[in-house]
Length: 233
Ligand SMILES: C[S@@+](CC[C@H](N)C(=O)[O-])C[C@H]1O[C@@H](n2cnc3c(N)ncnc32)[C@H](O)[C@@H]1O
Image (cartoon, rainbow, N blue to C red; front, side):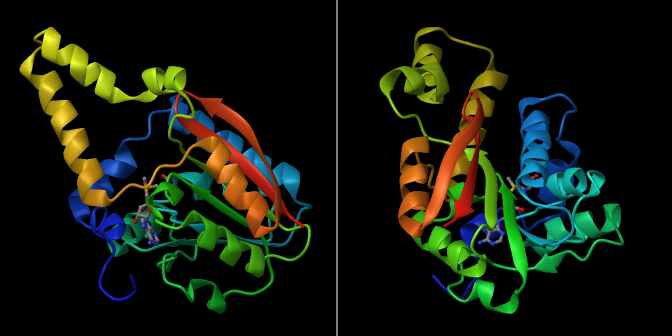
């Protein structure tokens, strides 16, 4: 997959998308709470000082929450989209946001001394979670920590019926709804196709983590948003 911009980066690499994404975080929303718990979990899992790496940081929503906790000596936020990084740098000029495509096989080679890796709402774009977790494992020392938040796929039919907007779409077919609602559903579907999502269930993610050499657990879930923490064995 090396060479050429990945669809999941391309989808975020326009000034409009970046500005829109940045403005879209509602205080008190599921996403906002999830980012807060992710930042606190990373802090609680590691001693103070040290260097942590953030993958797919986007415009820096999680980065800001981590920095506000004032716990780490260094936070290195990275993203593959120049446009997302440009918004991030404008809103936090003193933070060293770096361009990094973490789907590339050799992405981890430029980092050393990393004690923790953190990420939110981006791993579901990676087509090979087992490879990604092995790469993160190789980057961390024993006892190093990976904390990530992401959307998950349903594990069983009941969860599916709660998560899956297919149900809403079926319902929509039976009950004509205002045009705007159908338009939103169509836009979501088009976005999912364009950006190339590879959602996995919580149990599969935990399985990939264990097999890569982590001791891992799921810490939090609200609707289809979840947080995982993993310690390198
Ligand atoms: C939904 S946004 C999440 C941004 C941020 N983590 C947050 O929670 O607000 C997904 C981000 O993943 C980034 N991304 C997707 N594929 C990537 C890749 N291969 N390498 C680096 N970043 C990637 C996109 O550029 C985008 O900024």
